[in-house]
Image 1 (cartoon, rainbow, N blue to C red):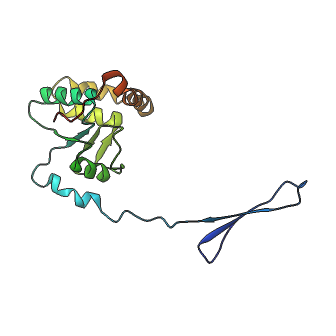
Image 2 (image 1 turned 180 degrees about the vertical axis):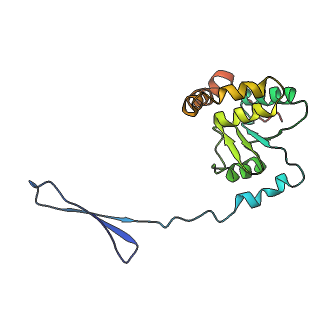
Image 3 (image 1 turned 90 degrees about the horizontal axis):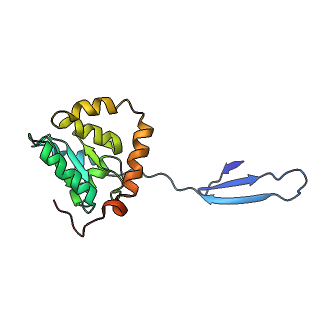
Length: 172
């Protein structure tokens, strides 16, 4: 049973099974949850003032990620997507805007003016911005359950340095 006390602590009393006679009491301090004091959507709205194109956030030192960026750049002839490394200051701010930790480089992120996408959803959304046949391929891949797509994404992402290597600096 948990009982709040006046000093900000909570008293937990554990009732032992009937064959034991002693009782245990544990005191824990509960920290009030602090909301993020910065509204990251407003703080990063300037990224979309002059240019409303979405921003693809990627791991700037990952060879697989850099190859993906090069591929998207080559296929995106109309330049409908902008790019930013996750490790850059702008990338960290956009990660916060997307509800992610500023040091989280575990996923590609696509940031639109009103919404963000991560993992396999980001990949499918990026495909929608590209030339044919990628939007059609994205349409069919959306029928694969999200947990299956993200499982496959996570397996590649978690092993990307071991399989594809990394560079010392961001190429873009």
